[in-house]
Length: 225
Image (cartoon, rainbow, N blue to C red):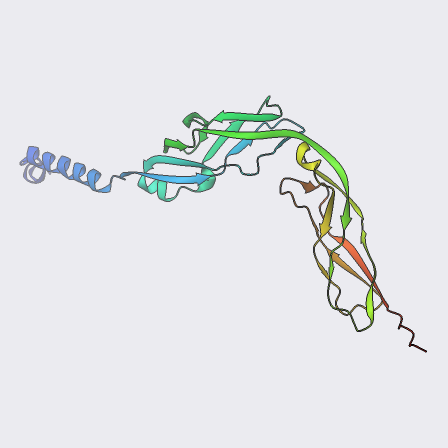
């Protein structure tokens, strides 16, 4: 055993140790994950939104977050793992400007934020209100010869809408999607949806409505004597 140790281990031990150290260093250099940078566009999150307050800006900008980290980690990094957060606690109606800094970006531990674009954003806020408006039917189609529309009704004929106060106040009515009543003789009922022109105003209880179309045969004109 001692002969084996002297011949295979102790002999030139310093050189062998040096070779081992060099091999370990080379392995570490070759296998080390290089650092990289990528930019990811993510939606801005608004936390602690005051009750009865609405965002009345039609377009909310996304944030472009440039991050740095191990290339392996960045390759697997998902958009859902990066969260730019703006706290709205105490915000009141009106136009407000917010700073967006690296401290407001939540992300995995191995990744760091290099740049945030934009660094500021301006958002409009308004009081949330509701209002009841009439629903108007839209009927299209070609009717049988001699037939015409007698009536078109909607059930329910009114809906409650909700949204920013100044935008809700401008809405007088909602309309249904077009109902194709081609060939209806008598009455027919169709299920369809309601459309509100303002994208920031929505039905409080969204769902289909029923449009009933009734046609009648036109009376022939009496011939000349």
